[in-house]
Structure formats: structure tokens, C-alpha cells
Image 1 (cartoon, rainbow, N blue to C red):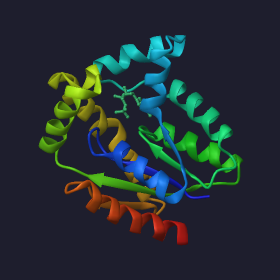
Image 2: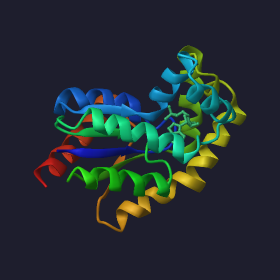
Image 3: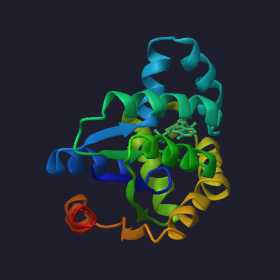
Length: 193
Ligand code: AMP
């Protein structure tokens, strides 16, 4: 199985690239942000709880996320692999993910980080907010809070995988197709082991 974490700050293009990569490599794309927005839309208790955090630009508690990831991994045991988009976002989530995969005799092949400058992130998110219908993309203070959460809680996840020699970085600025070409090469290398 080719299990890859597509990593990067909010607005770095993870969702856009994951959609292209899953087609090309026939992988399952799991986005915790999309799963949470689905729960909110369906007005589930989990959605109601998560929304309080998401509206403020804060991370949703680990227990909620780990439970969601666990059931998604169970559902996709027979796939060619998973692109993890938007998780793990904390070291506790990374440890839980490793354990969940370990039980299935599987593992993360690599963490691929999209590098994008902070001003570019803000511009992209505000632009996306015009059409995404996401309240967390329209308000600059919420966007900035999400970037702070990323720096404080999510960036350390890269070090967790660096320690295991599983970290690869890719330039995340440029055209979508250019970035995709670079990501394709990285995924090919990871799948070759
Ligand atoms: P995203 O669509 O990945 O930008 O996520 C939108 C929001 O959902 C984030 O700002 C968090 O509030 C929440 N969220 C998504 N994934 C996670 C995660 N793995 N851990 C904690 N919160 C998350």
C-alpha cells in the first residue's frame, strides 16, 4: 500500500493536488476537513461539536479526529493506499495513525510537505473564501488563527516523520500542473520504496 501524508499549511494546495494524485495513482483520498464539513452539513453531534472549533480557526480535539480516521482506515483496507489530507495535524494524531496502520501491517511511506509563503497563503485563502462558502476562509483573523495553529501544533508533525527519514518537501508555489508533476515524481519514488 502507498500511504502518503500530503502536508502543508492551510491554503498550500493539499486538497487540489490530492484530487489529482488520487486519480493518477488510484488511491483513496481522506480529508479530515471534508469529513468534518460533512458532519456539520448533516447536523450530527460530532459536527455540532467540531463546528465551534472550526469557526474559530482552532484545531478540533484529537479524540474526535482519531475516531474518524480509524473508521475511514477500516473502510479502505483493500485500497492501493491512502492520501492523508489535513491529518495528522498534531503529534498525538501522528502516533495514533502509525498505531492504526501498524495493526493492519501497513505504514506511512512518506510525508510530502508543500512549501508556500505566508502572504501567498492568506491571499489564496481569501480568494477561495469568495466561492468556497467556508466562513473560515473569509475572515482574515480566522485565517491568521489557523496559520498560528499550524505553526504551533502541526509543524512539529514534520519533525516526527523527519526522525524516521520519511520527510520530503516540494515547492507549492507555481502552476497547479507544475506542482503536480513534481508531486508525481515524489509519489513514484515513494511507491518504488
Ligand atoms: P481543512 O479543510 O483541512 O483546512 O480543515 C478545516 C478545519 O477543520 C481546521 O481549521 C480545523 O478546525 C478542522 N480540522 C480538519 N482536520 C483536522 C485535524 N486533523 N485535526 C484537528 N482539526 C482539524
